[in-house]
Image (cartoon, rainbow over the protein chains, first blue to last red):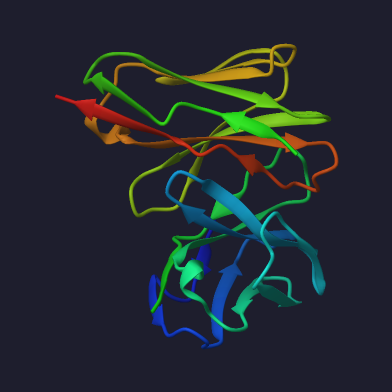
Length: 113
Length: 111
C-alpha cells in the first residue's frame, strides 16, 4: 500500500518564525512535489525535486526553500513565515514516467499569526 | 503556461449523472489527469487520458479531445459519497512529470 506522510496535520506559527514541513514517501519514487492549496486557486506548485539534492522552482517559490538529502524525504522550509503563507500544504510523489500519477500526502494546514 | 478552466460548483441528485468539463490551452500536451478530493483529505487519482476518446472505470468515465483542448469527467449513478472536489490536471512534454491543476469543481450530491 503506497504511502506519503507529512509531519503534521495542523501547525500554528508566528510571523517571522522558521517553519519546516516534512514529507516522507515509501514507494521509492524519484519525483517529489510541494504544493499549496487555497480556495479558488487550486493546487499551485511551489517546488519539485526529481532526484536527491536536485530541485526546481515551481510556479510560486518566493518565500520558500526545499531540501532533499535522501530519496524518501522532501522538506519545505519557510525561512521567515508570513501571514500570506497561511494555507494547506500538500506533498506528492511520483515515478519519473509521464503517465504515472502523483500520490498525495494528507496535507498540513499551516496558520501563521 | 497553461490555462485550465473548469466550473466552480455543480449540484446533482443522488442516482443522477453529472458531467464535469475541463478546457485547457497548452503547448506540448502529454496527458490529462482527474483527481477526486474530499474535504480535508488528500487528492486521489481517478483517471488518465493521453489519447482521444473515452476511458471507462466503473461509474466514472473520462473523455479527451486533444484537438479541442477539452476533457470531461462523467459520474454516473451518483452516490452521496461522490460529494467532493474534482480536479483536472494537465501534463506537458517538458514538465518532468509536473502537473498544472485547474481550480477544481465542487460537486454537491443531494438526496
